[in-house]
Length: 87
Image 1: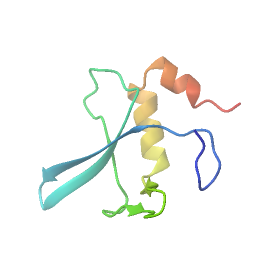
Image 2: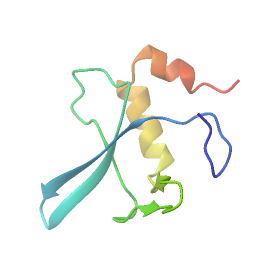
Image 3: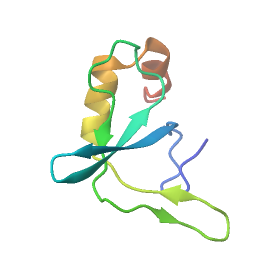
């Protein structure tokens, strides 16, 4: 899979989770490939809204890459970490 915006091959799949938190809903991205016994399994979305193309269905949002990298370093399975290493 390749990012349609920057053409990077470092693309992850995962789910967007919505949880009720203090002050309203908290939207977060939960990447696939984390260890089962991970306490913090998500990275907050930077913006509360997502964008979608009505022609092709491509859906996107934004997270802080450093927070995702820290989560993967701390809790990612070895296979996930290997996929994201520079060529």
